[in-house]
Length: 147
Image 1 (cartoon, rainbow, N blue to C red):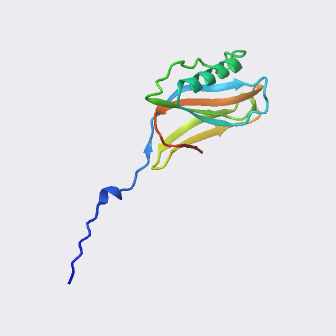
Image 2: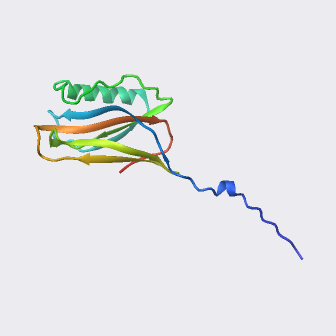
Image 3: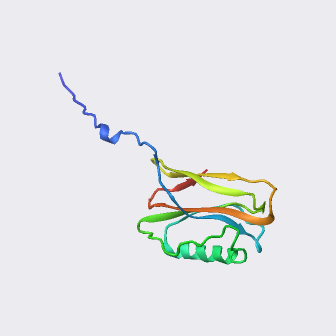
């Protein structure tokens, strides 16, 4: 006769509970598109200063012609040891009545999900533009998924 005892270690089987990630907006508005009218939506995760500086230079170059149309000054220094930056730039739209907003960021067990809300119509001041929203969140090694 043999007795077998199996112990259960529930600490490895605990389910992960998704958590909302607090984020801080560091830029939101419209980019007036003058040169490239074929731009599609871009969702970018920036984790280092070099990539951030490149993005800031590109956005400032594209915004400097129309400084009063939502082009705000972006911070030049971000602590990338502590934070990462989430950028969403919409495709080219025909009027300034379009907008884009990052509304929710959730940390899941396997990834981080970013929810983007877009609204557009053809009314309002006519200009080729790209709505954008840039936020920073605590640094993570998890991949970012955009919805």
